[in-house]
Image (tube, rainbow, N blue to C red; front, side, top):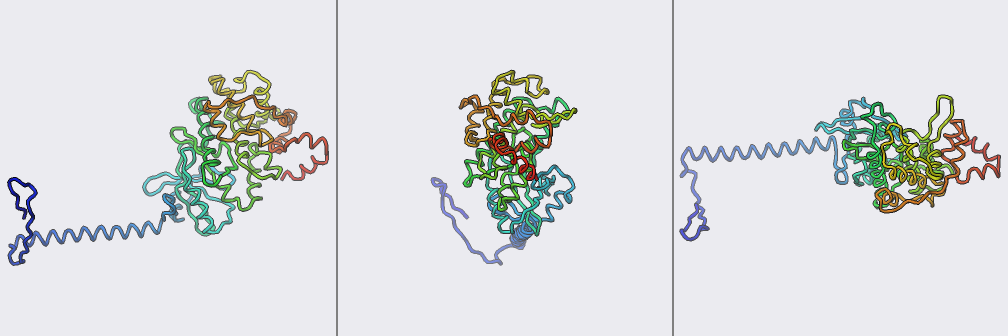
Length: 407
């Protein structure tokens, strides 16, 4: 009961205790019904909460914030026993999957990892906490026995190589504006890995296959950190990287310590493919091998009509200044001396127009490729050594030593 005065709306509350005998039969039924109904609601909520926690513990567990540890059976169910393969690379194959809540995922089955359970979880947890608009988001992982799986967000437009090298219709050809924006986005993602993380992360395998695109054609770098996972065994990383021909910095072959400039070199080699719309190395029908970076470097350094080396599918529709800028940046990136290569942050500033890019030095070692006709030789020498021509001339036996170690 609440007694209210005319002048004061607050009033006072009066509580009165009554015996159950003072209630009518109808009133008692209402009270008992309300009490019973409330108890059932509370009991239902409690049982549902317990069952939900039990199910969640059986299928997935939260680890380090949003990163989730998935059960292997749940991954099998989501991927329909790994039936739809999206692609693969040196670290394993990627499969498409769908979670019970209809969320589409991409699951990577890792191969060749020897980490223990605790070490794998710790390293994946580190990768999972890295967030950037130009990096593929890692949702979680699965580690059960010998099975090591990474669960990523699904990128609907696939990998960049399918858009640059396999465009069958004019509608699927990337415009020059889109290519330039993708190049800038990739550079920003690498800056984050190299300079913004607590520990510097070197990707070690920058190439179009490891660049994924979403619905808005925003580029996202994939497989960053996988080299870190395998990095406990240096020879394994070296072997894997030598399998990706055409993107390897000279220091990989010479055995020197790898720095962020190795990613810069790979990025530069990829920029040439943005311009040409084809692989850097192609063999013609008559058996002659064309190495595009050597041709692009000649046009860039010696001068010439820059649009003549542009992807023919673009029909010369491109900004000449931007094409020239991209070619100059690429030539700086692939310098044999890593001290001459720019940092990724400098590249971002150049592409955004903050810094000017000077005419690069002539990468003289590229002249080796212009005289080569054999594809095997060019494949090998794309991972060239500094001053390789001088070394061969001063010590001819060096060539035989190289041939023995082609591997």
